[in-house]
Image (tube, rainbow, N blue to C red; front, side, top):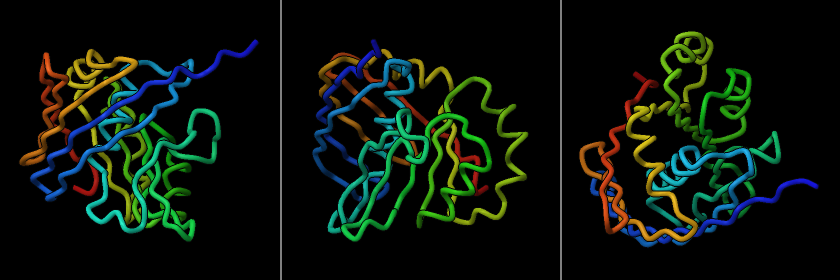
Length: 184
């Protein structure tokens, strides 16, 4: 018998002073049996930091990347089904990123593993044609600390200022300062 997804719920109060985005976000996360807390929290962080300023064409949503190979971790689709923002998490290959770059207006990648510098060195030159791609690295210590906030039911406050996010669950605050790898 196949294992089923674990359902997590998050209520997020977002105050992104860098982009003037102030909103409350409520999401349900279907966590794949093979996904760990760290990756799930990076997906949640990517959702929060990529939340659109203008929600008249919808919002960023969790997709089924671990179930469906043709879907990203998150995406923002317009009401006419155009992919406005494609978000990957982890270390996908260059072919996947180039394909996403051709399908979406904007593509973001959030890498967080300790092997990211080695992976990036091998893939960076293959992505120079992708003009709509932004690659972020969350330092490993910060992504692991973020994983400690994972609960089945979460109430989080996310404050963003000067490129740094502070994620608070009411008991502890985790500082996350993503490093932009591309464009340089």
